Image (tube, rainbow, N blue to C red):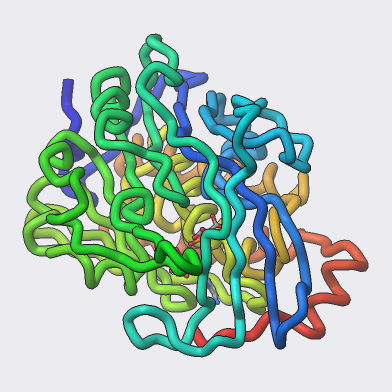
Length: 349
Ligand SMILES: Nc1ncnc2c1ncn2[C@@H]1O[C@H](COP(=O)(O)OP(=O)(O)O)[C@@H](O)[C@H]1O
Ligand SMILES: O=P([O-])([O-])O[C@@H]1[C@@H](O)[C@H](O)[C@@H](O)[C@H](O)[C@@H]1O
């Protein structure tokens, strides 16, 4: 069983079986978006919710393990475990406090309530093709990740599940170095590690890229893939940002959709950029347009066929990008979204 992927430029799965199974582990949460001292929106959050939205919309079959309290407000396709004596995890996102933990102007996140962690015994014992460890509020424990690498062929991890710590007084999110996270000894067994450019400062990319495939997202600039001696820049899609929440999560969803469909890693990362860019144009969960999804499916199949026939060449990702770009514009915003677009949640990215 190969857990570590080959270099991005070489990787492809020409005959990926249909219905590959994905396991998503991470708590749903309530997100409260605050600007100028007022609540501007309350939405369903948690990386697991954004990721399953992308996977479900792309017809990739997935199982989700998540915990919430009795106060959980949303109807979701994948039922969470309800912990009677706890509340749902809640994050407040402040868009006007200016500076985050490492000095960047960004949203400031506070975890104001935390549901229980996800234990190995909460995770089914069956096998999965792909696992995604995507906690937001400290719910993934080292033993949870250990179980995931046991039962999944390949595991993708969002570094935010591993390096976040929470201020005991106000719940502000702070980050610790990956080496001090308590997860470091398991990381040689994972396939993919995803970090935003701010989070990447808390790991040694040069070291990690020899253990797994590292993807570093960089907002409107797209992302970079590091694996062994390969480094690949993957271009972004132009977007009109309203709210950055969930961009990294939807990116990871798109990446995994691409991988399970059998795309090469850089092409799967381009699909990640695609779904990330749509997400920033919405407050909360984006509802993907059916025509857009159909077009994306067709382009993915076309791209796979090209690779299988070996008629694609090294620098032709531009063509895939150019063919996906018009698909974005088949998205139709609801009147509410359009209204919010005018105002937007500003944060300098
Ligand atoms: N303003 C933007 N314009 C276009 N694409 C964006 C924008 N912001 C984010 N994205 C896409 O979403 C991905 C993840 O966003 P990023 O902000 O880096 O992650 P996170 O939400 O984890 O901080 C980016 O790599 C990019 O592809
Ligand atoms: O915006 P992003 O970094 O991709 O991911 C976000 C998390 O950082 C945040 O803790 C959570 O409350 C949001 O719902 C979303 O999951």
